[in-house]
Amino acid sequence: MKKISLLGSTGSIGTQTLDVIREHPQAFSLVALSCGVNIELARNQIKEFKPKLVSVAKEEDAKNLQREFGKEVEFYYGDAGLVEVAKSSDADVVVTAITGSVGLLPTLAAIDAGKPVAIANKETLVTAGHLVMEAAQKKGVSLIPVDSEHSAIFQALNGEPHKAIDRLILTASGGSFRDKARHELQDVTVEQALSHPNWSMGAKITIDSATMMNKGLEVIEANWLFNTDYDHIDVVIHKESIIHSMVEFHDRSVIAQLGTPDMRVPIQYALTYPDRFARPEGERLNLAELGKLHFKDLDFERYRCMKFAYEAGKSGGTMPTVLNAANEVAVAKFLKGEITFLQIEDVIEQALHTHTRQANPSLEEILAVDQAVRARVMNN
Image 1 (cartoon, rainbow, N blue to C red):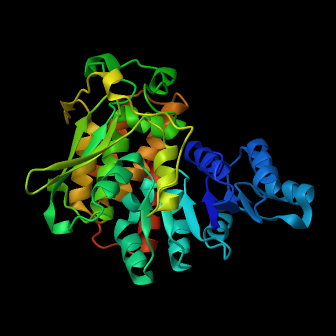
Image 2 (image 1 turned 45 degrees about the horizontal axis):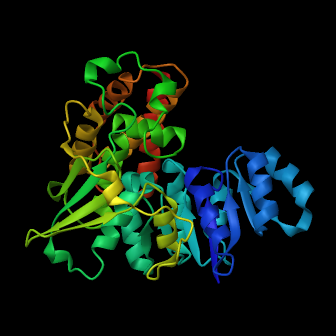
């Protein structure tokens, strides 16, 4: 039985990870989890899955839960609690399903503890990809992608030599506003932005999908995961989200991974790799019923966040850290109604243009830049 430590148990990826564990009780058990402030859902998860270690966001919640569950569960809180869950000695694999750069330190802690990581927290690699990959290589730790796009590439590359890759092709749904021209986005609402046509995701990632920053972050993540430079990573809009991504080889053959839009499939594959478990309740892909699949080129002027992501990724150093930090704060401001949808791009652009790039930053330098950018964007 594989023992799982889950960071972000109450979010979209976290709850679907628990679905997979629930569907295969003989194969998986949950030994540790972390959550934020959704304590009622966390309480139900603790009762059902009986983890021995739990971390929550607030100290008060940790104390209340400790009184409720007694010695059966050990409770922690805050950033230190995330690290405790990540390095849990009982875990065979750590699933990083939390959103944002808060995932960086626990991911590094899991790697340092020698734990394989099923990584769904793209911001970790965006913020400090060089440190994470170096640590994983040093410790001999596997990073198995959970994002549907990177899982698709990972599967397409099985058994293929790296030297045969010509380009990686990430597919993008286009998000909530894929059928709108840029001039129609000026007055869109939060509710409209949160209405994704294909996927059920958390608020932050849904907004990132609408701006296409989500795909920009995935481009940077792909650069690190698959050791492929940016000139060989392309993005194509594919509104059905059936082809999850593709690899084109230098003989011009293309291998694509297809499936219905169900995140439990890549989650399960990350947990069972190199094996595949059955999903008898999963929806079959019926291409005859679909009839057609649609694709179109990505326009950098329409989706300016994609342009920012490529530029920051190519520049390297602390620029991706700035990109991610500014985006996280800008999205939070939009969700609160403090800025408009298109102003998310303006906030990110200003943060990038006012930052002086640092090459090969240490962890301390990355954390300092991250906090400085957040403070500056928050106060503007």
